[in-house]
Image (cartoon, rainbow, N blue to C red; front, side, top):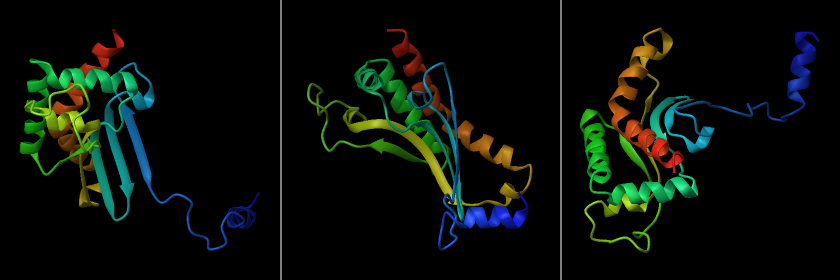
Length: 167
């Protein structure tokens, strides 16, 4: 097939010739769990922006239960709060995953970590215009710095998933 034939073949899929997919998303999960049941690192390019993030977009039923129990645990709960604080102080990262309007039934709405009980996933991320580093090998250092800043949340979630898989 020559290039003309390839162009005609591709053109047959779209009358207006716009690309089918206009972004690149790369998911790098950590641990032995299934792809989207594990926490990990996310790289998303959709001009004119780039998004870097960590976490777990949506917990499975079992992991959500383990997450909620950890949020109210006297050791794991404060560790999560500390991880969120560390990430917040490291840069302009946004916390994501808040889904529910109320604290789930069976949990104290006055608990110090009640806000975190309304999450059905937990992420931290930053979306910014594509930086100059994108066009050079400096992109690796750019991404590494941000992933390192967000690591406390990623690590907390990784530990949670490792413990819940052992149950």
